[in-house]
Image: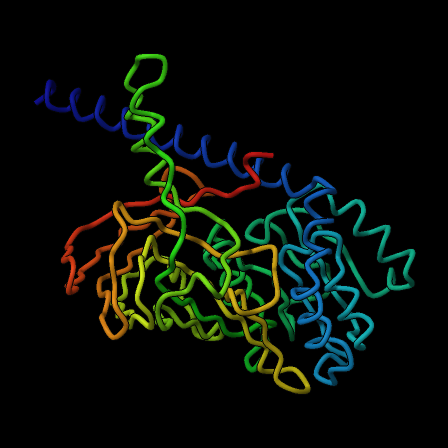
Length: 355
């Protein structure tokens, strides 16, 4: 019995050690994440996205719903959206961010005459407490969307704040999002280089590159199919873990040619604005910093108008990295020239890590 007990203790210690390492890795990744967002060039990049900023401005400014309300902004950055809320008549705005950029946010609020309304709090929204005297908020603002909608998984922070602090009947800006798929024509990935590098086979690198989802700008001339809705979110009802799902898709081909990959983009809506406000990251819409996300197929599909590319689109946040999304994409295609049934796996990593 004592031997079994000793083994169990060793096993428990090993499990605890693994959990400690995992927690340490996550904390280190979070520290890196907030360090990246403290860089002013990243904040400048966001502020130069005119589509993003125009949508939030139109949804918040002159919106009577903000009059005399308490507002919480999750992930405030330099605090521009909080300033919109203050100008719209909010009585109190709590601007929360985990990065050191909060130092600038406080100064900016003060220098623009809103220091008495806006309180800037540094910390993860999951770890902070609201200022003294405030138990609930009337409105949540959050620019939570990442590449392919769910990259960086900030949706979880918004849901946490909603469940903990938003009053019954409170408002969320934005409050809806939809993720779409389409088939596209693109250039072939030039991965043959890795087969022979100075006489050595580096195919392991080729396989890694083939499994990377790419963030790039796609034009409408590249789209080869109708779009298909794979996920719709109501931010008042979305539950934790919404970034992990599987969805069937059916892409109706609209013209003859070659399909080199699948494209993902998203739309976002603000239903509680004075008039309906929304924006899209579609190839047919004006440019945004999110661009589009592309999944290259192992081999091009020769398609004809009227044919269908069907399958299952699976997505989940990476267990290894808070930056990454993992995808399993099943493709089932029966065309006149070619039939294909296969599965490919992809990883989407935040471009900010490369900075």
